[in-house]
Length: 299
Image (cartoon, rainbow, N blue to C red; front, side):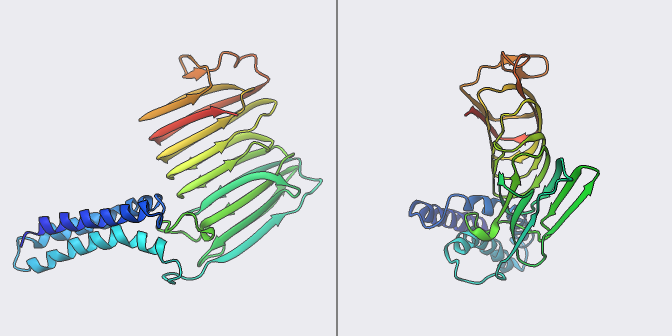
């Protein structure tokens, strides 16, 4: 009995079935991220094979291809059969901060855990949050120090991996007030993040992202916006106003990059647009971490 051939055959069959479900439109392509997040299980399966394939208990080595099969097909089947209650039902938590004349600026920290994040402006109140959880209710705090309001959102209900990204029970939505100056810090470990910050009076932005795909739309505002991005992602797309001057300090390794309709000049610190020093609106972008693909376009 050749365990290697059985394992390789099972892997090919499992991968082929997932691709077939992708092509038939039954499962989204994002399921592959769920599968890749199970990489520790693949190591366990490989270790079982190495231990038992040449021993007297070689039948136990058959557990290896079985584990491979379950780890590859499992997320796809969970995506497909949503009516099967493999986990507890999601619960919903809504929370908001009413507008106060005492507050002149906001400092916000958002740790969203393993959920998809949608963030935008347009709220009449200071902030409106719509969060989901399974076990532990999110922790939201609001304090006022002098004229500064401090908003903290912590998604305590951690998820080992996202099972299906387009499901509403994994989406956390936060809407901010457009007018108040905002310092924003986001920690996110999710499948996707859509951050439409174009309407916000954003002063500083600090993103710590460990996700598959992120899209950030930055605002046009007088003065300088400092934007720091630390990321371990497969894809990062930044939308910047065409009227803004842009400075990019790149401290990471990119496999590819794309800059649409942007003229950049190479400097000792990185890249800038020709009009950066004279621009009324400036964006200072510092990128750190491991980003496989970076795309910047204007709007």
